[in-house]
Image 1: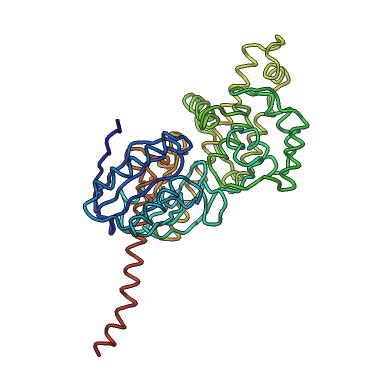
Image 2: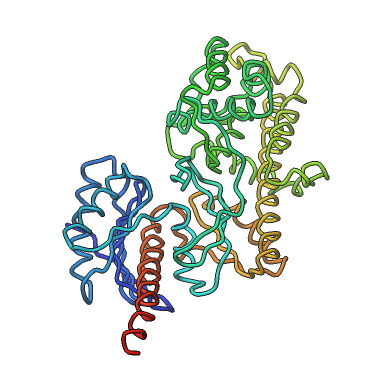
Length: 429
């Protein structure tokens, strides 16, 4: 039996009736009808037959809720998603336009639809991945959004994805990519430093030959697409600190990083950022160097304990020292990243005369990142908007797609009317 649709109400009505089919992960669909929003239940990731069948069922039920004809069907910019295929087929069947919406634009538009309709809004969209308009993998984007339009104002630095999609499941690869960015050898740094302190998902120390192969692959640009994904930067930090090199669950490395940072900040003041870290801003290379420097302060006994606890060299004090060092470094990562993101938004808000900031995307499930950014932005006099019902990830994305598509259709109609008007006046004359 299908779960019921969920009805939401917007303060401002959308200018067109749109059905949106969502993205790939945590898929949902929605119907935007005036100021009414009908959201489907969560279908899950569209890699399973069950999730795909659930999406098709929801689309049928959403059409039945429409107060009139569907005027457009919205979907993600990625051409290979099942949801994109379904949207295009439905649009063709209905004889309406299928409108592609960039993933992170939809994340911010989702917030705008509920909280800030009308004027432009700045938004940080931080998540694992979404196809950008330049056909690269985005995921750490500061966007200026006004309904159907968006401008990419800033983004996190690019990281290579050595091995492609597999890098998202193996944070040791992202750690190697971060080291490659700053000109350090993965086998030098991941071997004696970060590799000594593996805490989660351990499958053995990476062989030196494998690290050399990965370095060669990155140097030659073989199967190494780039990404600005915030999620992959979290993976890189978790890998550099030895918290997680293999993920068996989504965001395992990022969660381990947040957990240790939370433990540290519960008992210690937040790490102070010096001028070099502050000036670096969104350029995270300095921060990566600092994380490695923290780990390099560990003495040899703690090093041996972490590498081979079965050898009997581990003591309670050495184990505690390793964990304390990892925790302090994790706290530094969160504080430095959150402050850099907030400062970039504050500067952009002043430049574009914007007073409202939206925060959306799966990375904002991270309480430390979210709360520190909200506090900093609020203290700067900005109004911060978060997704309705805390739908930070892709589960709320369909509403953003529908909102953008509705305003895109409205803008197209308005432009057509404006072009026709002079011809009509000339005819009458």
